[in-house]
Amino acid sequence: MAVTIDKDACIGCAACVGGCPVGALSMDDEGKSTCDEATCIDCGSCVGTCPVGAISQ
Image 1: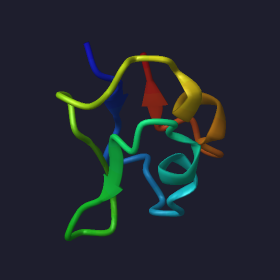
Image 2: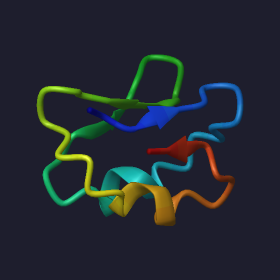
Image 3: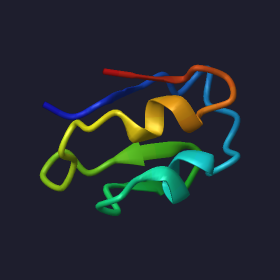
Image 4: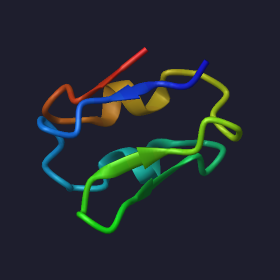
């Protein structure tokens, strides 16, 4: 199961992209974080990197 990203809370800082060890996170066309569920290993690394708490497991 992949992480959940609250698009309304996401500020588009991309901190989570750098915090993902498998490259499952990227920025979408709206400048918001998005997760590739097929790549995500649900490790939670990105949860701790988000400064606004927009990512949860």
